[in-house]
Structure formats: structure tokens, C-alpha cells
Image (tube, rainbow, N blue to C red; front, side, top):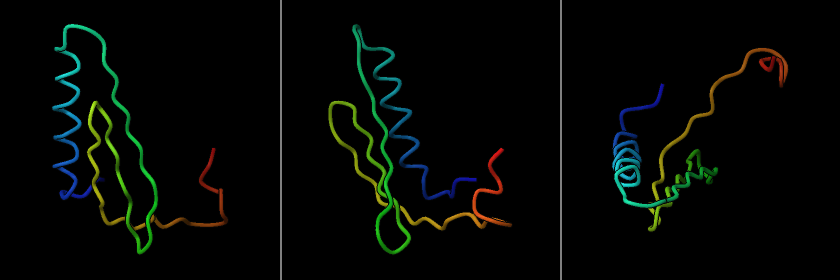
Length: 71
């Protein structure tokens, strides 16, 4: 489950999606995520402008050997 602190990011994505959908033409939206140091992720939303967010990230715990949860 996504922590509550991500509501601003999700609202930005939703608003941009609505703007693109209602636009009288075509548009493009990109979403990029990358790891930063100290347990954080950078989230970039691109849609005419760049929107940058930095959030804390704790990797999910895995049971068993690496790759054992892949079907």
C-alpha cells in the first residue's frame, strides 16, 4: 500500500491526466522513478513541465532466496 504522504503526487498525476484528456489535441505524460541515497526515491512527472518529488522508500522485505518470489 502507498503511504498517505504520496497524495500530492497522485493528485498532480490525476490533474495532469484530466488536462490531457480534455485538451483539444494530443498530449504526452511521462512518469519516471529512480533510487536516491538514504532510502529515498525521486519521482518525476513530465507533462509540458517537470514536477519533481522526493519521497522516503523502504524496500519490501523478501522471504527466501533472491528472485524466489518471481513466477
